[in-house]
Amino acid sequence: MIATAVLVLRFALSIALYVFLGWALLTLWRELDQQGKALAVQKKPRISLRYKPEWGNDRTLTFSQTEIIIGRHASCDVSLMDETLSAQHARITYHHRQWWLEDLNSTNGTSLNENPLTTPTVVISDDEFKCGNVSFVIRIDTEESIST
Image 1 (cartoon, rainbow, N blue to C red):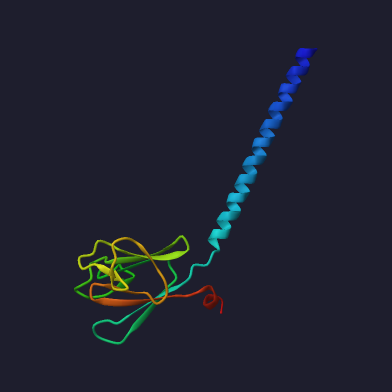
Image 2: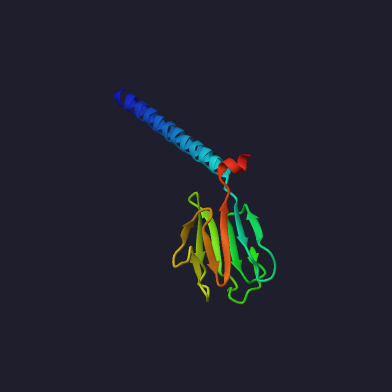
């Protein structure tokens, strides 16, 4: 009789443990799904680059993607035929809720606000950077300007 009661109790505790584990996993999955959806709809601020080519007037390019490659190669997002630019000269990326500028081991280097760029660095609106002999000015749209 006691053996039967112990067996039933062990069986009930095993079921309770599996129910608890299922509930815990379901709760974790729902939380992860909710955070994923929140990140997916998070707005990334647009970035504009103003530059002046050798021949012509100032040009402004606006991007909403999270990675921008600057260089001479035709596959670059900002492709300029300037001999001082490397094929892939610099990269601007958006992560950790900030825009970052990094040099891609270019021959003539990249400078940010007249300082040589040696590591990826956070950039803000009105920062000036130079790739080779080409100067750029950054403009980052704020959330207020996106919604209006």
